[in-house]
Amino acid sequence: MQFEDIIAKLREVCGEEVIVDVNEEASPKMITIKPENLLQVSETLYKNESLFFDMLSCITGVDNGPEANTMEVVYNFYSIPFEHALMLKVILPRENPVVSSLVSIWKTADWHERETYDLLGIHFGGHPDLRRLLMPADWEGHPLRKDYKNLEYYRGIKVEY
Image (tube, rainbow, N blue to C red; front, side, top):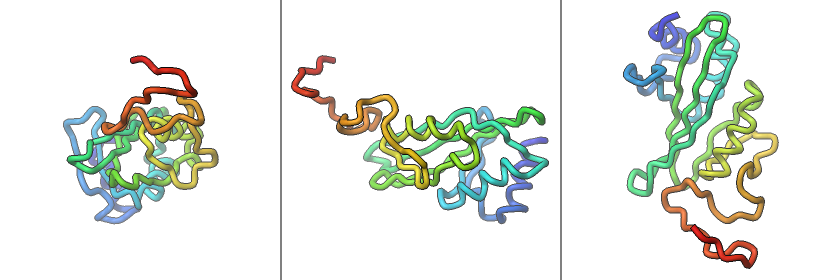
């Protein structure tokens, strides 16, 4: 299946307006959708027999900084039987970055979403156990946010960088 066929199928099932941007220069080729359409699009990518993206290989969070005032979540999907790939992006407001969890569709989303939450503070609504994964449970802040301030002390111990 070609990229154009994937887009056509998503528009057929989810509506013409579901894809807000297409980037054919990205590798793999990428679509951008609104956050409120993530669950519907993801279920279509997984459940539609002609698409069958059975593998969520990566979730990446991006902080575009206070100037842009946005954050992004980028998903990489792959269909093992059909050997096609797709990158999907949602753009979130930086003050309250919330998007639906995909754990109910792909179990691999569990740790990917926890990592993204831990490092960037992006919340995944409906996640069954959204807690820190890499940082201690009582760590303050999210270290990959562009406005993150390094702690001087943690539990009374000077933190040196």
